[in-house]
Length: 116
Image (cartoon, one colour):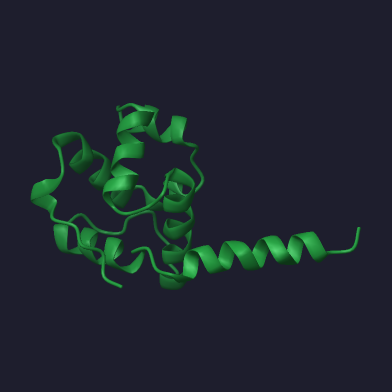
């Protein structure tokens, strides 16, 4: 499922977050929301709004999708690119799908059935 995002619909703050994530993706995947907010010079509320704008239920889901994307692309450097087309490609790849809730359910089942 392609992510329907129009850069023109993003606020100035969301564009700043968008660009910061793209330029620092390998760092962001390890950051807490507070660390990202501090590094990107914005509030945690702005980051949450951004996550919702890109169709993620919150920062944890966004970070999961970011890690998944980076692992699938096997990036070895900290730069994804700086063009809007790179940004759009990234967000299309991490677009929410019906598989995410299924993965969470499967993980919970595996954890709950694991012998202690």
